[in-house]
Length: 379
Ligand SMILES: Cc1cc2nc3c(=O)[nH]c(=O)nc-3n(C[C@H](O)[C@H](O)[C@H](O)COP(=O)(O)OP(=O)(O)OC[C@H]3O[C@@H](n4cnc5c(N)ncnc54)[C@H](O)[C@@H]3O)c2cc1C
Image (cartoon, rainbow, N blue to C red; front, side, top):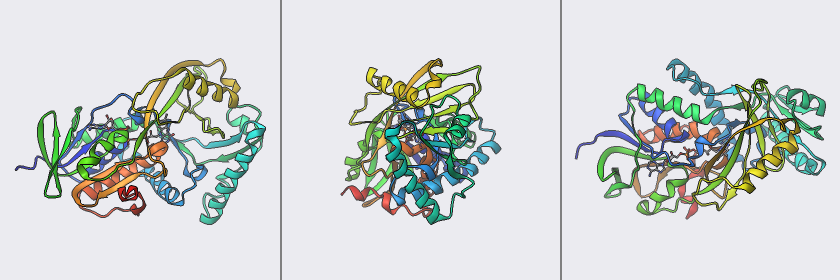
């Protein structure tokens, strides 16, 4: 049996593309199989990169998210050297606001959590993370309502998930990556080892396989004899147009009913999103979902009322009930790495998870402690 590739990656979202980019930089002969399902999460992701002001309660998630976001400048720098094109990555800051009085309790609880983490780690500095007055908040984000409380984190960043994924794939292709837009139907397994993938009736042999199929990854669980407890969670997100007004320098805004807004060049404002657990795989919009997103955006930022609506995007987050990704090897089966389950934080964690998956698939240790992300936790 001839090995055609060192590595096959199933899935070309942010995680698979990051793994591919890392693998080819290491000189591995790599094939990326991507079915480009409608509803792939990366194409709808908002792009908020701000672990220090996250409401996520898990310290395990938090430590990993900080490492993952710290990897971004290196990655973006490498892509710039490769002339891979725009990524939309920029430091823009973030405001967490209590827009109305009923949010003050949630604001206080989140603030206590955020400041406790800040104190315990000695970072970010109080220059970078501190309270601002409602008037200061409005000066930073002019369409904002008169809020009741606001916390400002200067070093929050944003990224355009589509652009970044395209840039990684393009740069990797320039260095020898093969990309095929077709479905991986099953793994080729022999004596407890993955030997490759069957796609379109064709057997393709490789030294290792990474499964980065987002919400569709559980399809491989039965063959591997494990439950990959990842499910689709639909998110509807709306893009608005404020041009010719420039909004690019405005911070991200997060409030306390699970919604947020952020801006991109060209007067584009992105507001979202619904979190529809149990949605199934249909990547469709709904009147209720769109109303929810618009109502919430205008409650927090009434100054957006005259903006033009550009589009509604729908993505299926690869959701896990414990909020942790599924990353690492599969007990009992050699040569396969899982890299999925990044839920609502895959743009933050995904590039680093992709790097880790590539390192492991090519025979190295993970640079981070990923034991808590093992698929074995699902039993
Ligand atoms: C509305 C919304 C807002 C979000 N906002 C943020 C945010 O602000 N910050 C943040 O960090 N995260 C955010 N996320 C989460 C983030 O977008 C996801 O966690 C991340 O994009 C998941 O990437 P992925 O590569 O695992 O999956 P996907 O992007 O879904 O890609 C999986 C790919 O695998 C392919 N595939 C699957 N099975 C096969 C197969 N058998 N053969 C071939 N190809 C296959 C699919 O077609 C797809 O192209 C948001 C998500 C949504 C929906």
